[in-house]
Image 1 (cartoon, rainbow, N blue to C red):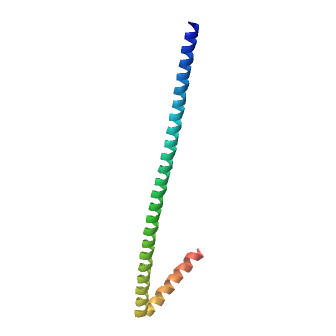
Image 2 (cartoon, rainbow, N blue to C red; image 1 turned 180 degrees about the vertical axis):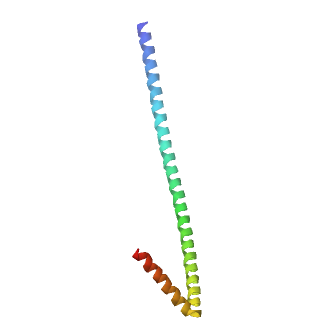
Image 3 (cartoon, rainbow, N blue to C red; image 1 turned 60 degrees about the vertical axis):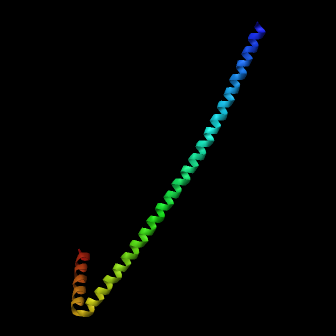
Length: 106
């Protein structure tokens, strides 16, 4: 009976060891799957960030172009007004210079 009981315990130990190995294998598989999923998520986030950065750069370049165009038009209008009224332009420039000198002096 002791031999049968010993055999039964060794069978239980073998079954337990087999289950432990299966669990280890399952945990390793899950870990690998999670690592792969995490890598995919990181890659997706990087792609989205690159796309958002590219869009932001494009919008900034468009705004810069628009501002340059507006500045060019404003300069052209100013030059036209100076040509129409040169004395007024000189007077305005002198007045602005005088005010700037007063502000710097104080």
